[in-house]
Image (cartoon, rainbow, N blue to C red; front, side, top):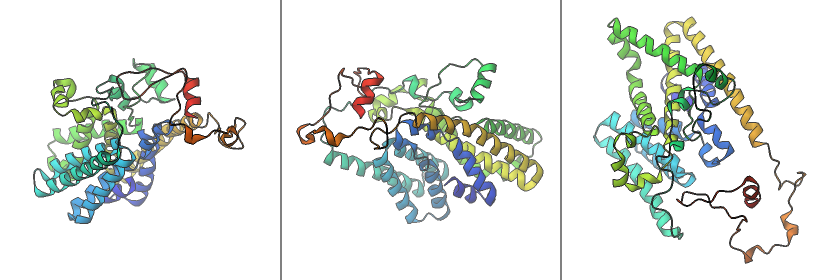
Length: 365
């Protein structure tokens, strides 16, 4: 979908192919492959953006239906993804259409998806005693920090940053959306170029090249602010008290994923526009962007691969730790649950009993 977005912004074919590969190499959702697997679907934010671009072109009913179906699918996969998409859609609607009829179309589709999901839960979810206000809302470990955006959590860049800056040893995992050194450098160069054009009063040149990028840039900025805890840390905590449903979306750091996808995509678009005017300069910048992203991404995927494959599948017949449950003579219809001893309880409730790794591993088996 990143490839299609780049093509919508008239980026060349090969730039779009390799640009999309470079962006996905460092995407922050790849870390979910070690846990929360349903959050590893890295297609949903680019798909949201792409459908909005199609809707913006034609205002066609079929794109509203596609958005509705996408949101319903996301709600049943992992509600966080749907809420992040709705956040994107809402900002796009406000910034693109103000309060026009097209804005209300997008809002209506978003609200309808939530109502359908809530109706399904009401009909089929008989579990009682769910916490109204889950644990963890505004917990610092669930927020993004500027360090987790601009400083690499992985070797070798992590060691380089540590040698230059004083950084906390463990940056929040939930809010990790590291842009990559290439994107950060390109942002600095782009900001410098923008400043120089403003300083030399070449306003028309600026408007010509960045006008179509203003709305996604604004969405990225607001998404970053929200993932940092704004407005709640700035006296806006009454909003969450007034709309307690907001507390169910307690891991705000995941909204920074929007910032990652938009900023990295806009970086490729801007590089291509430089390439269109100055081929040597633009080609050199793109080569640097691609090389550095693949270089950093190699270590990310290499480390994740080692983590994921650390333990062999105990249910595989070829595994040396093979567990054959069929020979245990367990009558499963006589039991409703497994109670691990020593007992642990970890979830979204306010009462938590921690576990040790050994009992957690075996009880999950």
